[in-house]
Image (cartoon, rainbow, N blue to C red; front, side, top):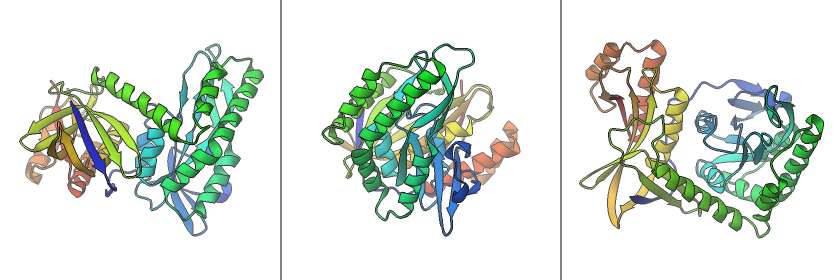
Amino acid sequence: MNITAKITGIEYQVKLANELEVFEFSYFEINDLPASCIIKNNNFSFGLSKWVSPKRTRSYPYERVYNTLGCSKRITVIPIIKDEGKKGDRDFIQWDTISLMSLLDVFVVFAFYDKAEKHPTRENKITNQRFENILVKNKISEIKNYHSSALHWNLKEIEKTFPKLIQKTKISYQNIGKQFDIEFHSEKGIDKFTNQFIDGVKNFMETSRQKAKEAQNREMQTIQPKEALSTHTKATITIANYLGGKYYFTTDEIKIDKNNVYLIEGKHSKNSLLPSVGDIKDGLLKMILYTNLKEVFINNKKYKPIPVIKLTSTKLTSSISSNENSDKITKFITRNDFSKNQKEIIEKLFDEAEKNNFLVIIEKAE
């Protein structure tokens, strides 16, 4: 089943974000900063997050971005390529990652690694890669004086800086390879990536979208370990926006009830009463999208979307939803003996659901 929808803008109130530590820009060193923080430069401050890979499914990058969404200006640093060596992974940034950041009004600093360490046990693999700090710092200084939208910044950076940045990345990995006598993946892959930008961003966009569609189709066939579903009904959802961006997702579960379609994002934990905060925030980024959907169609029929984040665990003794009354919620929390931290997560999560019109279900998994 394929669902299509549109997004014309984002309105959302973040409640579960971490309290971020503040750092002075004058001492800026991207590699020494936490995954999410606030950077202060005189009267200018912004939320900053950084990715450890351009691949969205590694190390909860969405959680890192989510934690900065309460800031009026937010910047995220993403490596355009990450090669761990011939015995490791190599990932390239995708158009839909950039498009999603633009939609969330997040300025992207495209970066590269210029330092690393040889992996202590695995041949032809590196670890502890470090960003080239000067480039990141200079780009942030540019953003400070940039008065257009994140979308315009991100598109400008792709068109004007990507070919040179890719070459810098290529040379950097050559140098690291010589330094540690390590083989990396074939440079033909990097050259092929570079060729996507010869005629602007169009080829990059189309190639990335094709890969996203293929990944979407693969995901339709699988149940992830972090999903415990009451049904196995998955659906693809293709979201278009007026910026020309398209987002290809797979809902973990859907339920159609008359003119309503429940778009359910599932997160599961085997060993704890709740999934990890990283998992929950990863799901909340989907809620940001789903709560802003317009013109939702399935087979040419229009539906009202009802976004749901479902948290399941075999450790729970009962279930609850965020639209229950306070007495029932209190009894549920008491019955399951949640920790103080877990109670706080539930309270903030339910508050976020109420403010943004989505539903949270916390459910005992069978």
